[in-house]
Amino acid sequence: MRILGEVALFGDLGPTGITKRHAIEVLLDYLHADPKDTISFGDAKIDLSMFECCAYNVAMGNGGFEIKEAADYITDDVNEDGLYNAFKYLKLI
Image 1 (cartoon, rainbow, N blue to C red):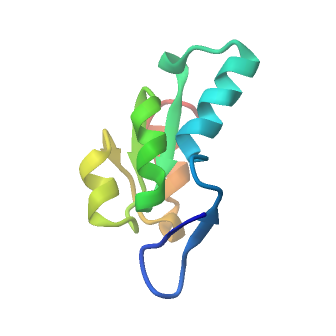
Image 2: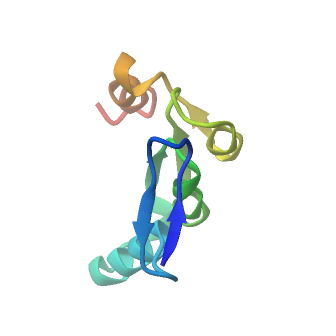
Image 3: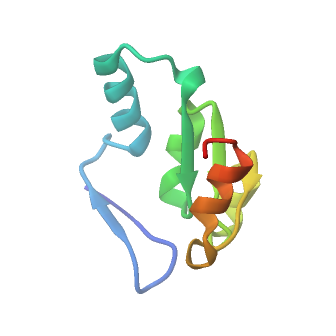
């Protein structure tokens, strides 16, 4: 088991070797989808593995330093319409 977390109040538990990257790769294989068509959204260190396999990566404004450093774009805080604003920026809506 691995345990990851940004601050003492929050954390993630999961089986060793199963990451968000692994989950996305399994899903892409199942859907016969191309990784170049993927966008990830993250706000914590646990999302970094997901950023490694997606074509475009968005960090939430409330995210930590490491996720922002790895992002292609940093949107607003999740509580300040960050997802909506990112979707508009990416011309998804």
